[in-house]
Image (cartoon, rainbow, N blue to C red; front, side, top):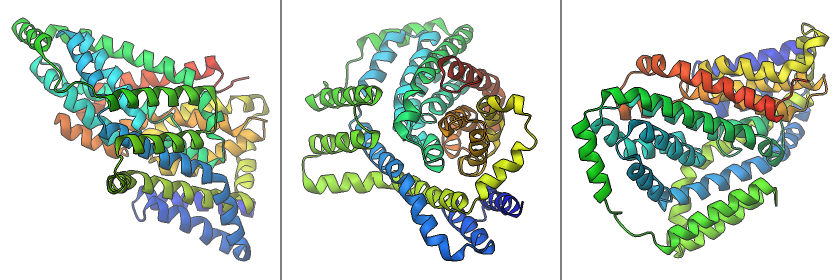
Length: 430
């Protein structure tokens, strides 16, 4: 009982420090378990506990580091520019096609994992056309946030799922392969929502503006012909994704190899390579630090017995007949929790306890990680999502106005994601 109380106090203190912004997530995730472990009399063993936790998250930290660096090079090389130009030309001024094209590009650029970068690319490509055709800019924001929450929130290098994988000590490949089918189905569902939103915008159109834009797009020539590096980057990215889906090698090895190849091909000069790495390290290092901090956090919580004690306390109020529904419950409760909470507080504070509880019923922690990641669409429109404030600045709209417009659509897509995850077996209910 005492370990359970100390465990909940650790989580509560951590979440208080993060939510009230008394400390950064990295500082809070280090201080709180160490302080309470010392209070519980485990001071002499803390070093070994920390190393034990670090060993389990090292592969995830490596994966995240090289995935961010790889996609950073692809973004610098403007890999998706031809796709954006093609989508715009094929739209022919039709709002429905434009919105579906927005979804396609948003889903692709979300592979980068960085919300701010994704939003800036989407808005720079489509926002001028939205304004010319009098399409509500809240549409582009709703589509972009759903795409980011689905792709970046699901991929092991996107940040959110990375936290779940690291804190539960999971194999990234095992986690991700089972999430690909529901992620793809949800992406198609988002494109369907984009089409509906686009159709609703048709009545706002000025026929003269549509005709003028259509003629302009038909005559538009690409600013430069695609060079051999662009084709090489596209082929390398496709090959990487195919090998990833096939499970040909661990994700960390695939991204390390792809990054080295991309760096040599796109930046052959040694001095330039150093600049590229330093430039993109700013995006990778903070999250890698959090992953390592999560390893220390869970190493201490697990080895002291706090996590198991907390799970035992929670199981006392869960009927035996409903234990098999914990993954579904995690996915559903994750929607409101992700909306209001920071990812650090949710994945490092709530998810481990749910995973330990599920383990008492023979449910693998991988399922809890998958279920927890589904709430990322709701997180992407919540006040705790930092990139959202950049997006709102780009479209010049207030948070409340955007949430009133997007909430029902995002909730619908999130529930569809849960349904797809259950149907495909990514999370179980049996």
